[in-house]
Image (tube, rainbow, N blue to C red; front, side, top):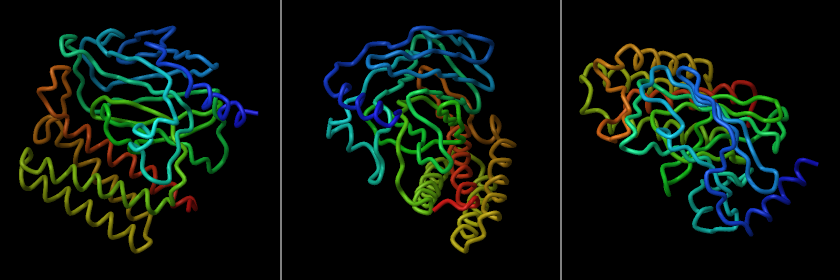
Length: 273
């Protein structure tokens, strides 16, 4: 029944305009915000956004909104990797206004729970994100039932969607290694050479283990990579995001990239194809 519902709402979304904010309830509690999304066609989700450390947190300062996506828009679809499909025609956007003064350290964690989709063992449903009008990539850090929920971490903000990812797990892992290596290389000049060399060595060793079939070894080395990033966050590696967009949260992005890579490596270890 839920599969039929999703198919019907895909057709409905193609005919409807964007639904504005789409937020019907919000609660700020310490370092987290919980909101309810409600859109035409019975589409919706409960969303929780949590921070390790955050300043000036409010719904207004987050710039959070939701709207229907048009799954027949070829320009929109071109933003997804080949082998993936939009599973739910809902776009969650988090774009803090520059004047709001929002800032956070480390990573932000996002959890989306929707009853429009159903969790099954081995489900290919994933949480993807993209910069505005940019390319969507898998940021999944965990999935679970109830009816379907997905978690991800991030070093900044963007658009978020739930995607059906039909690619082989090895392809996904290779892509995540590539992205993390590119990030690390881009940040090389902003950290001490000894820290960069340590991280580069650990990442290369993790990739070598993955390519040789030693998945557990790869996971352990990614854990070591994460530990080094956290150890040097805020001192040797910048770890602050601000709404003024004057800083790059390098530690947050590196941790988020390594965390979603670890998720996919665990899937492979559990027998995923």
